[in-house]
Each structure stands twice: as structure tokens, then as C-alpha cells.
Image 1 (cartoon, rainbow, N blue to C red):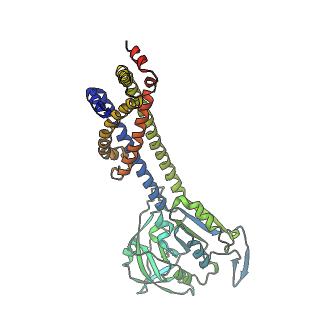
Image 2: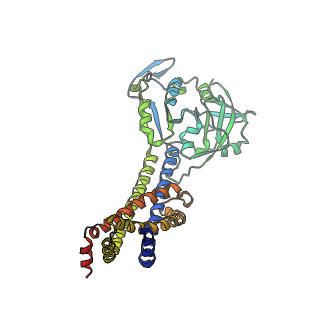
Image 3: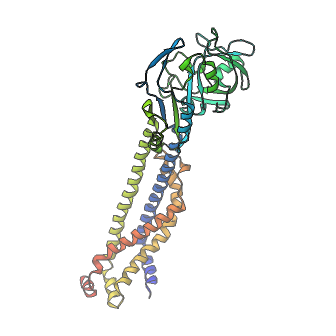
Length: 425
């Protein structure tokens, strides 16, 4: 009788032991497959968050260097400002998704009828950012503002204006409406023609510390506005340094690469970095990353513990089974069957169980993984057991199972046939 037949017959005769090993393998494999699916979902979530956490760095003038000079009726800083050429050089570095730089002023806006665009403040001035790319303005990136109509202001836009929904409705304005902007209507400041290209909704909550209004400003968020940088420069032409860029924010595509991107930026030789300060803005990513790392470590630890405990249990079960078969083993050896063939029979018996348990575990894990994933804060539909997971577990599990059989049979296989039979007398 060949060893394959002997393996099948023994598994059928000792069906209780077979079922015990079967359910143990089924449970272990299901848990490990689920753990791998959760770990993958965790990694995917981490990759997504690395690109959406608003991780950036700020380049600003280093006011501790340079000095001041007087002329043309005022005082001017001799410190270098951020130029358009400098912005382009930094923005061209790999890994930077976009940037924004703004000139801030408090202009007034007038409708085509000549009536003032009114606000809720003491004056009708708007706290306005003259932005290059409003999509990357911190107020939009942070989620405090949301563009609900029209489009963002972009670098090639010359006269665009974005206002809040509240002010638009109050003043009967909409996307496409024409307005005139004046920095100070009581002086000889130039009038600049503009067109409303977008309307934003204020999402921030004054009672929510995470999104609360800036208490240092007298302007309510609904009285904020955004215009193109060229329009702001034209409005502030009479204000010397007032129409120059003081700082700029650059957003990276991958938060994990922030440090390397900053290092590459600071290696740009055409920029005198003694005149500028670079600050990383990755607090949100660091907090989230720490939490994700803790969860990943927990899932990995659980997989290792489950595998280790399972190996011990299987070795114990197989060891007891093999010890109880000493007489059978002695007879097989006595009739001339080699030890490797006997051991191979034991391996085949275990693999026959695994051949059934592993595919069933693959099916059951598809149902279980999502539920287990919710315990780790994952959406059930994002926790997916893949064929790659199954192949990995099947191969590694098969190797470990064979190793467990070999370890379990060592003590018995060291004995000679007569010794094995004598121990059974």
C-alpha cells in the first residue's frame, strides 16, 4: 500500500484528530488573511493621507537680517522680498504639488452702479488676499472655506475676485458680476476692474477650536475675499513694500517626503537662504502618521502572535498524535519502509487537511475581514482579502506546517524499530 493511500485512510480513521487540525488551520488562516487585508488597508489609507493632509512648508523673509532706508516719503526695508522668479524656481522642484503666495490688504469694492459692496463690519472694506493660486491658500486647504461656485484664482488670472456666499447674496452679486476694487477710496489710489469668478462657503465654526475664526482679526470670515495677485499689486501700487510678497506656502504631493523636498529646495544656489526662513507645516500628518503607525504595529504584532501560538498548538497536537502511533511507526519501519517515507506520510496527512482548510479560510476571511477591520477604524468595504494574500499564506502556511510535522516526529524517528516496538510492550 503506497503512502498516499495510507495517509488518506489514517485521516479518515482518525477523523476526530483530523477535524481538530482542520478547524485549527481554518481559524488560524482566516485570522491571518484578515490581518493581512487590514494591514494593506492601513497602508493604502496612509498613502492617501500622505497626499491630502495639507502638508506644506512656508518660505518667509528673515526679518532679522537687512535694515531700513528712507525715501519717497516713507521707510522701506532693504531685506530681500520673495520674487516671482524665486517662486517659480521653488515650485519646479519635484514633489511640490502647488503653492500660493499672497499680498494682503483691505480694499473696498463697488458695483457697476457705483454702490458700495457692503459688509457686516464697521466699514465696507474686505480682508483680501491677492493670491497666486487660491486652491492652495491655507483657508481652503484647511477646509475652513469651500469653493461652492465658479473657479479658483490661478496664476494666469489678472482680474478675478472670490467673495463669500453671504456677501454675494446680500449685495445681489454672482459669478460673472463686474466690480471695481479700490484700496482706499478716499485717496488717489487707482481703480481696478474685476470680475467675480468664484463664491466660497464659510465652513469654519466659531465654537470649534479646530476651525475657529482668527480672534486677532476684526473681520468676520464672511467679509474675506480673494483677488488675483496682479489686481492687488495694481491696487497697492502707492504703498511701496505693501505690494510685495512676504511669504509663500508650498504643498507637497507626499507628506512623507517633506524633509527631502525642503532639502532640495534649500540647495537652490540662486537663492540667498540667509535672507529667508523655511518652516515645515506637517503637524496634522505627524499626528495621523503616529496613530497609523501604532495601528500597523498592533496588526503586525497580532499576526505574529497568532502565527507563533498556532505553530505551538499544531506542534503539540501533532507530537501527541505521532507518539500515539509508535507501534504503527515501528511496524512500518520493521517491514522495510524507510524513515523518510514514514515522515512523508505524516506530512501528506497534514497537507491533505490544509488543502481543504486553506481555500475555505480564503472564503471565510472575505466575510470576516471587513468586520474585524472596523475594530481598527477601517471601513469594511476597504478591507479586501486578495488572491495575493491567499497565495502568500498558503505557501508560508504549508512550509510552516511541514516544519511542524518534522519537529513533532524528531523524537520518535530517532529510535530504531526494535526500540519503538519495545516501548509499546
